[in-house]
Amino acid sequence: MSGPPVNSTITRPTIRNVAERAGVSKSLVSLVLRGSPHVSEHRRQAVLQAARELGYRPNAVARSLVEGRTHLVGALVADLHNPFYAEFLDGLQESLHGDGLRMLIGNSQWDPAFEDEAVEAFLELRVDGLILLGIAPTSETLIEATSYTPTVVVGERDIELAGVDIVVDDDQHGARLAIDHLVELGHKRIAHIEGNRASRCEGYLMAMRRHSLAPYIMVEHSDCTEEGGRRAALALLTRDPRPTAIFAASDMVALGVLAAAGELGLRVPEDLSVVGYDNSHLASVSQISLTSVDQPRRTMGRWAAAMLSDRISDPGKVARLRQVPPDLIVRRSTGPA
Image (cartoon, rainbow, N blue to C red; front, side, top):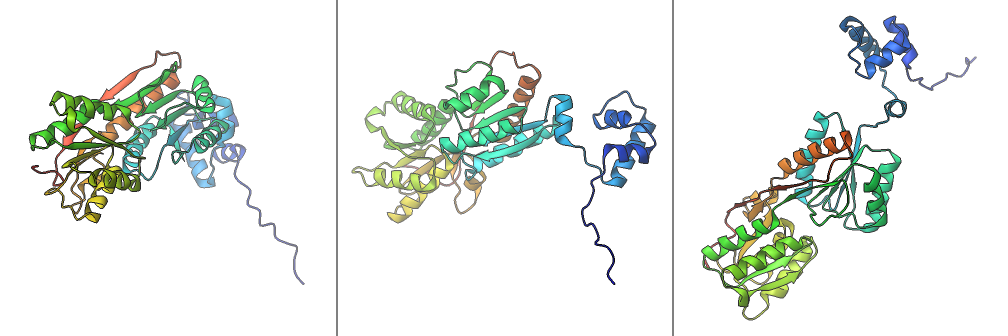
């Protein structure tokens, strides 16, 4: 005969079980789990040992109701395929972890509908703060969210919302570094492929005019993808006369430029010099060796985390802008005109 059915349901240990194992009260276990300093070290270790033995995990929802915080941060990224954003998130996560915060990531893929959906999901999870990476809060959903959720925007400077902090690099200075480098190499017909950073294009225009090269200004718009860069480069490189150098709005766009040059039989840098922006890990790959403007992304991530922690602690602070200076990393994709 078979015995009675076995109940396969596994019961999760509770705070009462931890208290019984440690021989203390439930309230003392709660104090230990909240990190209270008002507990002796002997009792703290007894509680932690009991929790480990039982495999106890605190109920995050219950704890957030007690503390009024979830210790979660929602990071909304414009495009996770862009290496710059991924590398920025490394620096951000390291710093948030040091502040006792955990990061949730949403990928908007440059789609406003996805942006709104991700932010609404973050808010339903009651995140303590928001990081918007490469995304300007322009929709009603994002603007409303920033009005009651501590927010830091990274990479977008034209934000006029009270209490929203901004971390950017000096795009105009970065563009000047790129154009100055190409001019020093003897280039005049220097084109620019514009992405979603108007300030980089402004820096390009200013630098060209400063070098008295206004007659040679050529600007082609692109999205922020490799394929968009390829299409824009083909449009520029089939002009007569064609540019001898192209300054791209990002490394991803610059990869498209390199692809277009290959299709047209142009050698880099002998026939065409190319400069990117971001100095992502792709730029340093030996087969690519792309000259690129370096945004110190890990530094920017650390600043964003620090500003968000400050904003969470004091939501009434005046909005701040932190501008990080870029640098130019010269590699083999640029040469004499």
